Structures are given as structure tokens and as C-alpha cells.
Image 1 (cartoon, rainbow over the protein chains, first blue to last red):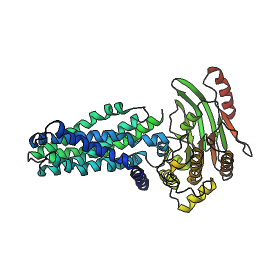
Image 2: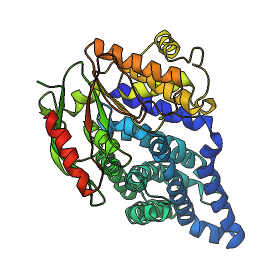
Image 3: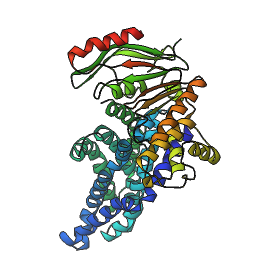
Image 4: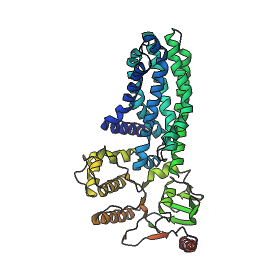
Length: 223
Length: 223
């Protein structure tokens, strides 16, 4: 079971590294959106600092949302998804491997580049750990919840709007607590409450989302 | 006890009745062809037999146990090939086969993969990327996968699609050899397939009402 997890994870990482332009898309989107705000709104440090948590978090969220399609689309179209469902291993373990690969390829790069964008948006140094940790706890949840949405819409042609409608309401709490953690940290207050909430949501999503995704995939295949 | 038993299966697609009260069974070392015109529900039937699709009513039993309860054992000993190629363009032939076998938690050595590729007429193709292959060659990779999967039951949906004359002969030889070692095969095809020793067939009627009787007749003969 663990070897099946490991092999599928490795396969997805290998596939992604062989088409690096797709890999770079979410990251470039993230950097572009954040770097456009100072040009469009105001380049003064005070104004930037005030909107930084929201801008960075919204951009990260949209960036993950745009990359979700990749999670199951290709496997669905070439029939590999059927073979995954016919595996003697539990489907939720395989789903977890795919989601983990997705996070390593989209969420983790966002977390790593976020401090740079934070400085760019004049986030004070003492608030950068909060930015990193809130994204580190929040982005896996975005991938996990997104997987449920993708598994329901993968068979729908141009299901992007539908996917957003399903997934965005579930993303809202993550967005609120994530951006708030950075906001509070900038004011010099403790952020453990927000981070603990994000951690709790991650634990919940980690245990329930793969199961929901597996069920949704079987429903999609049964059509 | 039959290997696979189908009990009064009913399948609808968008309110259109494809078949009802379908029953047949398959024993060790038996080859069964599902016959029927386009749109008569052959693929739907095979997907129900795999557990990928839910029947409206009726049961599929694997060695006397309902499919839903025997899923793990069934999937470890059954291999299914559908219409879709399951081949990743960015992976090499050997990696593609390995990825397919990994979902079944089967590890194979490089030599074994090379042997099976030689058997299906793709000698020396192991490092070629999947996107460089023709559709017939992709089908041949799936044949190599079937050979390596070491399954008791093969469920093949149109295995002869895109194959040349030697490919058709190869599939026939593979099925005969599989039968000789006690394995069972269920397949559909629109091409003529000549097997020494003959095979049984199940005919699915068309979607129209007047063909229902002929379908019921042919299936009751088998019950």
C-alpha cells in the first residue's frame, strides 16, 4: 500500500518535471499578480503593507485554483484513472499520493517564494514567519479540498466555472484565517490561534478529503 | 463455483434500456465474447463487470462473493483494458508499463519488461517516449501489460482496435495461451477472431424494444 503511494507520487513528479512549463505556470501567475498591485494601486510602503496579507493570500488561492485541473484531467482523458480505480490498493491512498504530488508541485513553490513577495509588498521581517507558516498549513488544504471539486467536474467539458463554484466557498475560511494570521503578526501580536485553526483544518482535510475524492471519482467513472 | 457470475443485470443509459435480466457465468479456462451492435451496451457491460459502473439492478459475483465485497481480491486477479490507451506521452515505454503495474503493486525487473516487449513486437522500444508511438504500438504496450499483470481474468474491450494482422494473431495466441493455463477471458470485438477450440458468446440486443426478445432468448440459453 505504501509502495503504491510512493510509486504514484514518483510517477506524477516525474511527469511534471518532464513538462516544466506547466510546472512554472502557477508560480508565474502568483508572482505576476502580486507584483502588479503596487503598479495599479499605490507604491507607498504603508498602502502596500496594509493590503499585503490579502493580496498574497488571494493570489496564492487563485494560483492553486487554476492549477487544480491538472490533478486528474490527464489521467481521466488517457484512461489511467480507470486503472487507478481498478487497483487492489485503497483508492484514497492513491488519491492522497496524487494530491501530495500536486501540493509539492504547486503549493510548496508558492510557500517558498512568498517571503520574497512579502518583502516586495513591504511586509515587516517579523511577520514573514507567519506568512510562511500560514501558507505552509493552508496550501495543502487548498489542494485537498480542490481534489474533491476536480473529481466531481473532471468529466464535465469546460468545468472550470463549476469547479470554482464548488470549491471557493470551502476555501473562504482558509483565506480568512490565513490572511488574518499575517495581518495580526504585522501588528506584533501572537498568531498561534490562527495557525492552530489552519492546522486543525489541515488535519480534518487530510483525513476526510481523500475519502470524499475517492467516492466522487467512482461516481464520475460510473456515469 | 463459477469464476464470475452475472445475475439478472439491468443497465440503462439516459433512460434508454440497454439490457435487462442478463445472466451468464464464466468458469476457469473459458473464453467469452460479448457480441452486439454499436450502442448495444458492450462497453457498459464490461465496465459493470469491472465494478467501474453501477448496474441499475442485478449482481456480479466473483467466486461466489458480490463484487463490492470482494473488491480487493478481484482487482488483484483481474485486468481490464478499455478503449483509452492509458499511455503517458512523457514517459518511456518501460516507465509506462511500470506505472501500470505499480497501481497493481507488482514489481518487475527490466529483463522481464524487455521480454514482454519482445513478445508483443516492440523489441528495443523500452526507452522510446510514449508520444512517439503509433496507436497500434500503444495497444501493443497494453498487451505487454496484460502479459505481465499475471491476472486470472482478462476483460478486454475491443483489444483488436488499431492492430495490424500480426497484432490480431498475437492477441489470439495470447488468449489461447491464457486459456491453456486456466485463465479466463471476456472480450468484445467487431473483427472476426478465430480461436481453436471455439468460445462461447453472449449477444446483447439493440436498444429498440423489438430486439429485446432476441436478447432475452440468447441470454436465457446461457443461464
